[in-house]
Length: 88
Image 1 (spheres, rainbow, N blue to C red):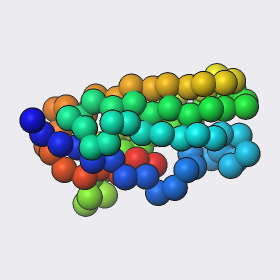
Image 2 (tube, rainbow, N blue to C red; image 1 turned 90 degrees about the vertical axis):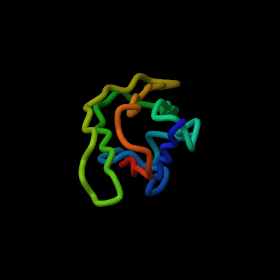
Image 3 (cartoon, helix red, strand yellow; image 1 turned 45 degrees about the vertical axis):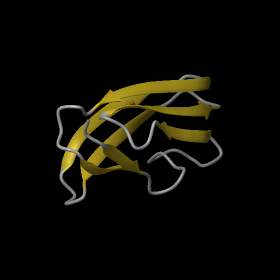
Image 4 (cartoon, one colour; image 1 turned 120 degrees about the vertical axis):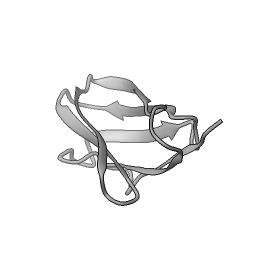
């Protein structure tokens, strides 16, 4: 099994006020390339998830929509080499 570890630069989604989201979790971590992002939102808006490797190369850029309340998004990076990846 390969391991993918996701690091986060803090509990914040780019372009989103800190009072608009809470309870950000990325799990499982480490993982085999398949993982989930969950958070609570008090507004509807678009947000962008960028995942980079340790060299800074973007391996995933995805524009997503929130809903008010619980949000859950699944990701599949199982085709990428094992390593550490950064979620922004």
